[in-house]
Structures are given as structure tokens and as C-alpha cells.
Amino acid sequence: NWLLDVGRPLVMLVLPTDWFPLNRPGAAEYLHILYNICTPLIQLKMLERSPRTFPRLAVQLGVIAVVMGTSLHLVADSITRRLLLIGYQPHLSLRENPVMKDLKPSALIDAFELLCYFDDTLGHLMWYVPLFLVLFLFFSGSFSYRRQEEKMPAAAWMLLVPNAAYYWYLITEGQTFILFIFTFFAMIATVMHQRRRGMVPDGNGLFMLYSFSAALFLVAVWVACLWSDGALRKKHPGLIYVPQPRAVYTLHLRQDTYT
Image (cartoon, rainbow, N blue to C red; front, side):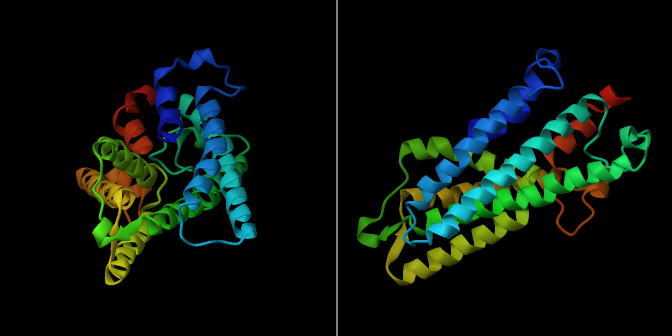
């Protein structure tokens, strides 16, 4: 799951653009298709670890929502990748982009705004709400009694860094900080509740707690480093300021390419 999701932007950066025609799917799109297939299966396997039993209809609707959300993102993200090749700048709003200012007729901008809505709003909600819900339900089933208290194995410590980095990627690129922080608070509340029953997180539970804590630290460092960036502040004007890595990349590392 990590490789397929994080590999999409990396493949786009590494492989030459002329290897794949712009009117056909590229390597990033094929990875996204594989991700869309694997993610619901992984979430179903994680739900099997939850101590709670859910109605089959609710599980089926959740899987359908994930598939639809990731599919909406696949289509919208594919178009965005091609816009990047002709000068689209993610750190600017859609209407402020030089590419869109020259678009004729100007009403086409409304169509691109609809595309962004399907990608950044509707698609992300259908994708990430079930994802974080499944992570929390998996965590709620990762407890054991104190006399059976477990520690994280060495392999889990090795996976902690990439897992925390992946959560950082979900929070920043997916703009899911609110979902993440509410899930984290729910996890902390679950730990406090289970301790009253004499239960503590097992190896999987500790792994998730440490991963979420490390991801929150990475996000804090990321935001602190970019706190005074005026262009990114304009892109993210709300109360919660979490810049997207793609916007940072195009603003500070590829800006000269578009001039």
C-alpha cells in the first residue's frame, strides 16, 4: 500500500514523460489502479481484526465508497499531472494560474473547478473517511490484558519510520489533518478506557500509536519550516495551515521551469 500510493508521484518524477503518450495512462496511473484494487482488500482484512461486528451492508457501502473515491481521484489526478507538464502551478489557486487565464472560452475554468471539487473534496472524503475509520477499528482490536503485555518486535521498529512518513504524506498531500487528529484523539481515549479494564495496547496497538505520534511530530516540523511562506499561506488561507508537498515542490524546486 505504501509503495503503490507514494510511488505514484515518485514514478512521475523519475520516468521521462515521453515514455507514455499524454492521451494514454502512464506508469503513475497504473500504480493508482493497483492501489484502488488493493486498498479495499487490505481494509477488509484489517476489519477482521476489529472486535466489533458490523452489518454486511455497512461494510459493502464502505468498500464501494473507497473504490469510488479513489477512482474519482485517479481521473482528476491524471488530468492534473498533464496540466503540470504545460505550466500549471499547484501553489496557486485555479483561477490565478497563468494556464487558466489564457483558457478560451473562460467558462471552461468552471469545468476544471468541478474537477478539483471531485478530486480534493468529494473524492478525498469518500477515500479517507473509511480509511481512518478502519485504522481506528483495527486499533480498537489491538489490546491485551496486562499479564499478556507485549512489546514491539524489532521488525516493527524498522517499519515505524516509513509508516510514520506515509501518514505524514496522507496528512499533507491529502489534506486530512482534521481526520487524522480526530482519529488520534479517539485512539488516546480508547487507551484510557481500556486501561480501566486492565488492558493495554499489544504490539500492533503500540505500532499504530507510535506511528501516529511520529507522524504528528513530522507534520509539526513541516508546518514550522514553512510557517512564514507567503505564497503557501495564500494557497491555504484557513485556520489549519498544512502545505501540500506538491505545491512546495513546484513553488521552490520547479518554479524556474514554468517561467
